[in-house]
Length: 176
Image 1 (tube, rainbow, N blue to C red):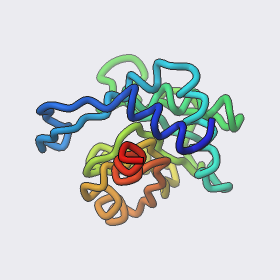
Image 2 (image 1 turned 45 degrees about the vertical axis):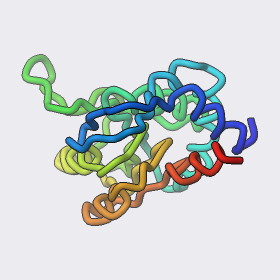
Image 3 (image 1 turned 180 degrees about the vertical axis):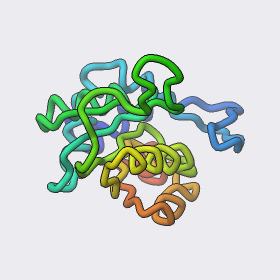
């Protein structure tokens, strides 16, 4: 799927308009329902191809954030053959009591995988948790950067954000 075609398909499938409260606590008139693009095999595959092109070569493990980053990390893992870990929002209080499940992240270069980034708050928190488990986390990959401070916030956490699309790019595709 061509990049412009993918942008239109994501926009058509996932962009909702109205009044939405975001995880960051802010209110938005547009919301990207990531389940609408991760639930469609054609879009998920095309997104994984685009994410793979953004992946730094030194990355050894893909860390998908609960819940939207999990299918993206799984699809990207299939595409790149890199192992995946799945990151909880909070450490499990029972069983293994782990913050992440899947492959061991200790001593490995890890990229956090997320669906949509607004402020990057959860990515920053999760990167801190993964680092506490011994991971070397320097990158965050996302499908959409809403361009609302996430890039800058993540830089303050020592993370480079790489997004398939920015909100501006998706908006300009809408007008074309």
